[in-house]
Picture 1 (cartoon, rainbow, N blue to C red):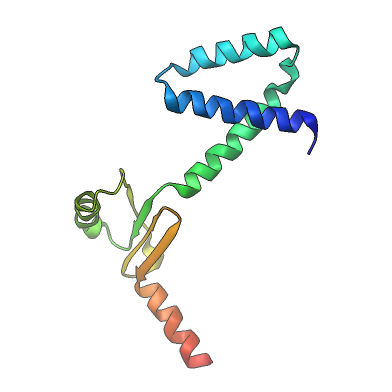
Picture 2: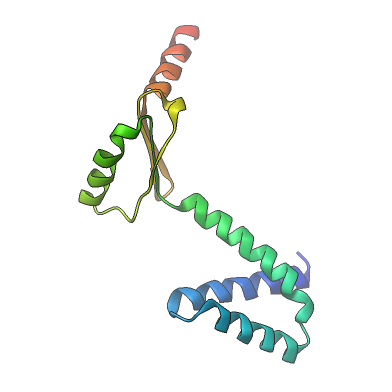
Amino acid sequence: MSVTKKLARQYSQAIVRVLEKTNNDNSIVVKKLIENLRSTGRLKLISGIVRELKVIEALEKKKAPFIEIAREEDREFVVTTAKKRNLPKVIATVNPSLIRGWRSCVSGTLVDNSTKQSLIKLYRNITN
């Protein structure tokens, strides 16, 4: 890994930590970052930092809890059940390809309780 990529990654990780620990306005953090980069002669790192921040955002999005439901009618039940189980704010999205049931991912663990998954398992058992 090149030195500039390593520096960009370190800056982006520092930005994320600062934003998590403080309630600073993003614009203040950006201004201070640019001041720091300008004073240290590292202004060319901005594009690399932005790239690394996008990578971090994509990874966080992947880790974010989600629930997919097959029918709109199930949304209210799923959301209230998630609240009862003290799950973080979960957004239920409709995925008609599930046929019936739901899929959930929390802390990187996928639980698939859909008819689609049941049919796939049945098909695999029959063909093997």
